Length: 240
Image (cartoon, rainbow, N blue to C red):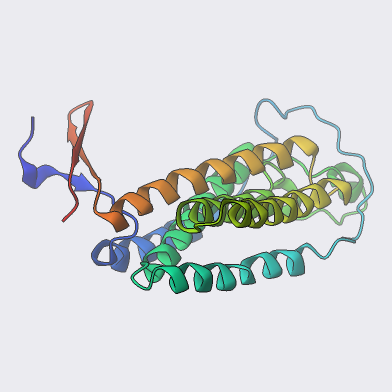
């Protein structure tokens, strides 16, 4: 096994790493989002017809998302009232990591697949189709709303002593996330498959990042990845 000096460690939530991993993540997201999608959609979206008419966004998903985000304030206040030593700033940075990874995966999928939005063919015939109209798969509204809902819900389940309260908070978050996601398909800004895949991707990332940050904040685990040619070793050790 390679020496310890060859270790590459990624520990979201550790402030000494977050000082550079968060900015680097932002730069990577910015770089990926500037890549142009392919001229023709890649498999499995080649040959799709996208002849729907563009519909104005009728659902105030932005405000619903802002309201859900604001709900983090009473959640944090409730947790801090029971546990003054709760690492709030650590989990705020964890949320940032969660959304960075969500955006990186979302942008990467969009620019790789280049799927047409449901109204693309109609808009193209009238000369109104733009670059963003070829970035349908998968839905960023869906992925980000479910990433937040999952991270915040997991935080509630782990830190709120009252189980009914934590379930109530989670149900409000997931209901809001589902409404935001579904509105993108109802308004024909996305296909339903874009919404479903985006929701699953966001929920998965939110869950994984929360558990990693939670382990780091409690000093339970630190994952060390050791590259050795084509082999990747995982070493689990107490966090320091």
